[in-house]
Image (cartoon, rainbow over all chains, first blue to last red; front, side, top):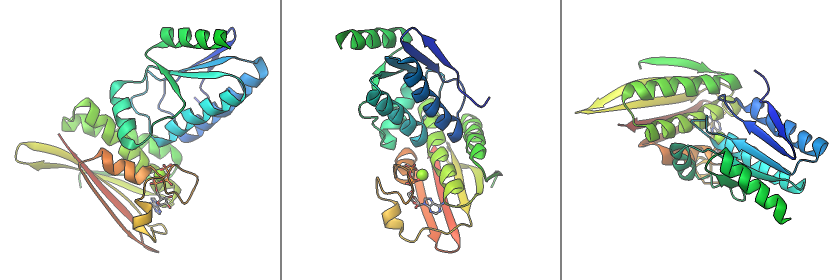
Length: 120
Length: 130
Ligand SMILES: Nc1ncnc2c1ncn2[C@@H]1O[C@H](COP(=O)(O)OP(=O)(O)OP(=O)(O)O)[C@@H](O)[C@H]1O
Ligand SMILES: [Mg+2]
């Protein structure tokens, strides 16, 4: 697989990362997402990482970049499903993901996105 | 050493993570320690590819009394690190990284040692105990 699928749900985009991504795959996802946001005028991006059992500095940086990029393009990003062991490890690694919104699961993430978009 | 695998290209970083996961489980590390060790290994393997021009990861199960541990060595014959103190500074990168790989990996494991000689290569050894 050389691409992570991006699902369109109305004005939102949903990405479920289910494979251990090599670096190029992560970069491709970053490009694909910004391309989708601009093409469809999406208002929000939900990234589900519940299947990931590690997030290292590279993936962490990608998540931060996507969040920053989407902000510039007037969209919100919410990261959902981070496993507790991953969260603990990220903090110790020194990666705090500033500016990235998180939610426990997809349902709550969607609710957060809707609230954000409505508030605008 | 109990085993070794090459780390030459980006995909080898993924393979290294998979190997370390398997070994960490075999070693009896609890989940959060597995996650920490795999993450540290991912950082070091990527450095081996990007800065070291490729190299190897060796592994060894270690024992001390009733404790078991897993020791990993990342070695390359690349350019080496001229200023190790600088390289071990949070946030310092010679490339486009976050400069968190070495310092972050050190925080995630129980033992960490960095040896590097300019023009000869780099060797990072880490160990996690259960
Ligand atoms: N195997 C190596 N050979 C030569 N230089 C290295 C090696 N590993 C690390 N370095 C040097 O040490 C610096 C710091 O490495 P570190 O992994 O901490 O950060 P980074 O790789 O630059 O960024 P990040 O890992 O956060 O993406 C690197 O920028 C590089 O100059
Ligand atoms: Mg690095």
